[in-house]
Image (cartoon, rainbow, N blue to C red; front, side, top):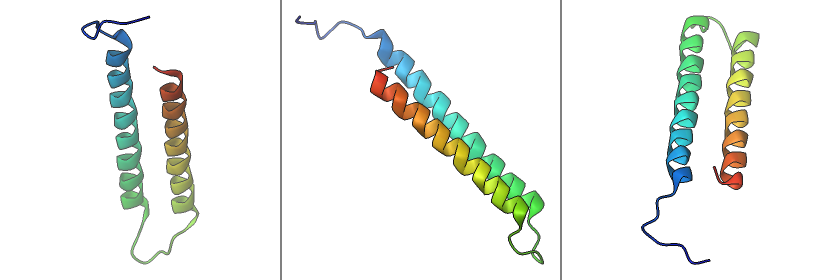
Length: 77
């Protein structure tokens, strides 16, 4: 099949929307992580269990969104 170059691709627009949603989600996680560290961390305290939990939470969600993004790109959304 030979497709016309001027034909619009509706999946291209949804792909951009998905990109925006993923980037906003990632940004919210990053800022949430930094904000929670600012509230929890104290100069006199060393890294405790709270920071480790927050870091694991952030990395877990980052990995999850990255995997979701990879699967969606592989599928062609």
